[in-house]
Amino acid sequence: MARAARPEVVSGERPLLRVEDLHIHFPVRDRVRRRLLGTVKAVDGVSFELRKGETLGVVGETGSGKSTLARGILLLRRPTAGRVFFDDQDLTAMDAETLRQSRRQFQMVFQDPWGSLDPRMSVTDIVGEPLQAHGLARGEDLRRQVEDLLTMCGLSARDATKFPHEFSGGQRQRVGIARALALRPKLVVADEPVSALDVSIQAQILNLLRDLQGELALQYVFISHDLRVVRYVSNTVAVMYLGKIVERSERHSFFSLPLHPYSKALLSASLDVEVTTASPDAALRPAARGDLPSPLNPPSGCRFRTRCPIAIDLCAQAEPPLEEKAPGRWVACHRVPVGVDAAGAPIPAPDAPVTTSP
Image (cartoon, rainbow, N blue to C red):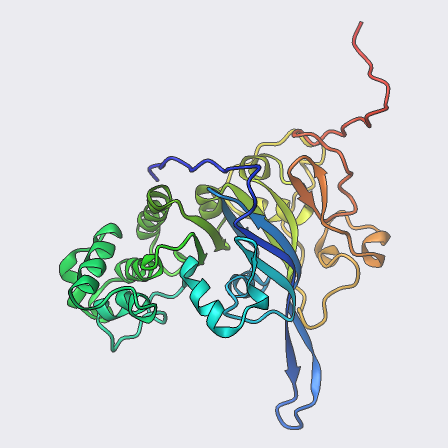
């Protein structure tokens, strides 16, 4: 992939997006008696911030809650608990009309370019619908803006009169991206936007998203199960497991030295991602054992403990909090000590004596 310049993350400013203790639960009922059988905790206490110029890559196995989190961020799925702030405005406290007006600032690119486009609508209608819904363009001005958006996304102005069935998968995804950008949002949430595409087309779409980020000053939350994709597009990586973030770190630190056992297992299972590490537990990096437990009945304590090669009794008794184990490195694991440097070595306490070589 030809690398486009990465936008610089602006630290010190207030975050554009702030998610606080987000929960999204689904009741499971008996189909006949309609009894409540349990609750699937698809997202269970997720918190993070997204700053200007940042792309947060969210990675994890199927069933970890990534797509539900994506919809919860934009309130396409109402949270059970927790709050979502955009530009310091609490989206979860807004009424329906205020939230609709706020949606001009954040949009979504969906996974399936077939299912996300109405086959009965022309491209002009699909891409122009957000502009019409918010009263921003009509008639000739609408047609011109649609053509400009299509050209920006690598399509031809002549494509505006076509219908979705006349395009390839990659072209349909470009239409979906053009629709997401129609209102000039600040934030785009991309839910597995290239997983349904051929590998050669994936590279084109990823390069397009990178280029658009630089041109339009976009911020992304990028959902993917593919570590290669996350490594290419992200500044920061968050790893989800059974509804929780178990590690969050700057991209280079994460791929150089993952700290959570689940992160190590993911990287070990990815044949296309090289990891170099000076960590003494480099040998303890087998793939996670067994299958993902049911989110209807997750394990006690640490949810990863049933598949973890280094679990101890404490892991079954207490859920590990997501702690900053080192500057900018947040990990939820009892076995990772607080205070490790970039090489995984312990950092001495501030009052500890400093020894020097003679």
